[in-house]
Amino acid sequence: MQIPNENSRGANQYRPEQYAVYQVAKWLFPNCKVEMEAQLEGFYAVPDILITCSSRKIVVRMNGAKHDNSPKVRTKDIHQRDRLEQAGFKVVDFNNDDHAIVFKNPQSPQSVKAIMHELLKE
Image 1 (cartoon, rainbow, N blue to C red):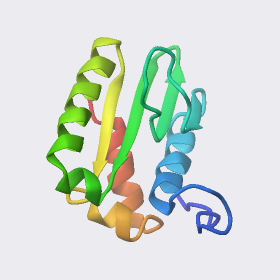
Image 2: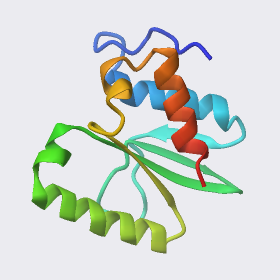
Image 3: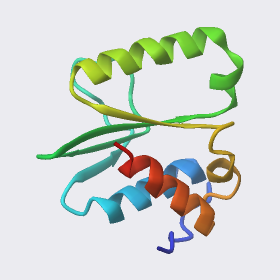
């Protein structure tokens, strides 16, 4: 899969890694609604990517360096994950440390493979 080279800051308002995950999700789940930064009813947080259809409810969170370096943010993320999972969502986190290739080179074949693996993981 080739990700369109529209993900530079000049082409849209989204971070390149967020746009790459969005494009892969649209390709993987053609019958689902895939949205960036959509408000979830009943939740304060706005997920980076929301994937919904009759068979799936997935929230994707792109956790950069501030998530890795802040105990307060990590605690908030844990509580948010718990609430989302209790509401029936699968939560997929792309963390800066664990998925460095996605953050450093989001259009690479290795990134696409890593994104697909995380989105399809049960």
